[in-house]
Amino acid sequence: MSLQENWNLLQRELQELSYSEVTIIAVSKTKPIELIQEALELGIKVFGENRIQEGIEKFLPLREAGKTFELHHIGPVQTGTLRKLFGLFQFTHGVGSVSSLQALSKQSEKSKQNLGFFLQANLTGESNKHGFDRQSLVRVLQEVKKYETEYLRFIGIMTMGPSNEDPILTRKVFQECNQIRKDCCPQAKLSMGMSGDYKIALEEGTDFIRIGSKIFGTR
Image (cartoon, rainbow, N blue to C red):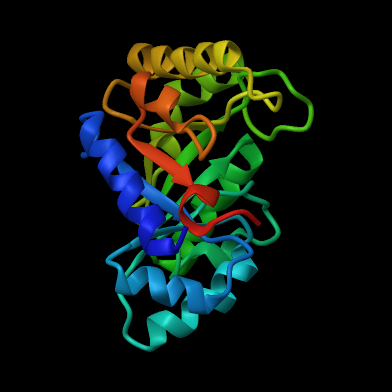
């Protein structure tokens, strides 16, 4: 199906499921700028990129051309490159260590550009996944306000389901993330769910879903 057909189908699904208030992040990683321009013409305004440099190469020309959009960084935050987040990206979802959180806080004071951040939770225990384990996440949430600055603000928690995509395990992970949110920071937002498991994420209370292939097609 075309990009327009994919987008319309997804919007209808969300409306039928009564989740029309959820924010859809259209994940455009590896997709060419021409496809992003088509998405903008369809009214898609919220995008996600895994790699900071790829996001800059595609979205900076669009910004300079006067296009309006909201750009989320959804990959792991690395201390060596996080300075590039400021100015073009409005949000980053991959803050998964205290060191990167500290560096982000310091850089925000230098850059003087607004950025919202999500703490990334690794609740599956998989070594190939970035992020805080449950105990570390709870500890950081208790003191997260100290890392905020005039320009840097805490938005919520991001997590991913297990790599094997087991729906029962996926639901348990999303339930656990939501429970941590309720217990530690009830005002925080949740970023859970991708093309393969977003319906489970919706049922478990997410505020953002990160959708790539279901909008842009397979990579």
